[in-house]
Length: 123
Length: 108
Image (cartoon, rainbow over all chains, first blue to last red):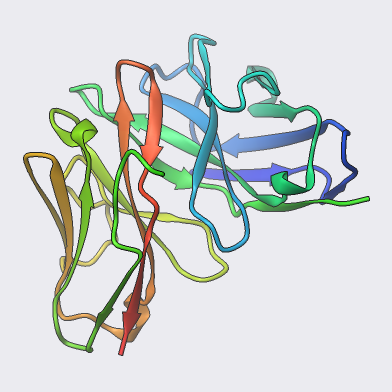
């Protein structure tokens, strides 16, 4: 059974750094067809992709946020960590981690999602 | 603005057919995937690779593409289908996924 679960602070102050952890089970990071992304959703708004890490440790970031984001993985702990610096109230959102599957033609989609964690940025 | 364009809202009576569209140049040559997000819940994959359904998704959900437009069709709409629906394409050139702005489906 594949599961993903986000953990971290639910309240951060402006200018602080947010660190979120995604703990996964039911699949292996060593599977080249599987990888993990972070996605967020401000209240009442659409989904926004943030970052992605492949099994070979290759990383990709949202163009608009890349200067503030760092993604990493700890295979031994089955965890993917996202840090976001200089938090602002506009970063208030539900943050999701999701597993990415790749089809033989190279297309990728999010087949399993965590429950999400609502992070509020406020002083 | 979004690379993938979806109508913000759609209303359908129970038992009727809902068609949610998703348009954008990026669709041409790339697979389109669809997610259902009920209020307060995480998104759920309902169609992948344009027209395939994950295990457990009813046959009432189907997908198709034509040129730069993809369509999610929900047949015999039920009250439980009321949700936001998002399309998604993975841009293989940039390795960045793109989401549409979402369509809120209301069952009248």
